[in-house]
Length: 108
Image (cartoon, rainbow, N blue to C red; front, side):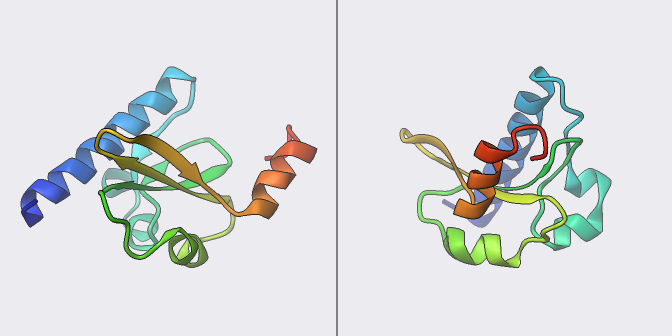
């Protein structure tokens, strides 16, 4: 896929995921339009959830989940949302963040 098509695919995925969060009552906007600083830190959505989202719409993810999560800010729970053609979308996060969600539902 060409660079321009890949970029467009990624931006489309960001907008669709923001729309998905809005369906559930969250005020989600792309960080490209709202916060250049967060966008530069690898955060793709600005919202009122307790998560920082890095969205990837690629077949082969590089760098991998571990590296992406390590480089994201930690004021909120960092999450990678990865969409692959004909494979669906998955969420990746650190085990300790997932455990906190299980233990302290209202805090995460």
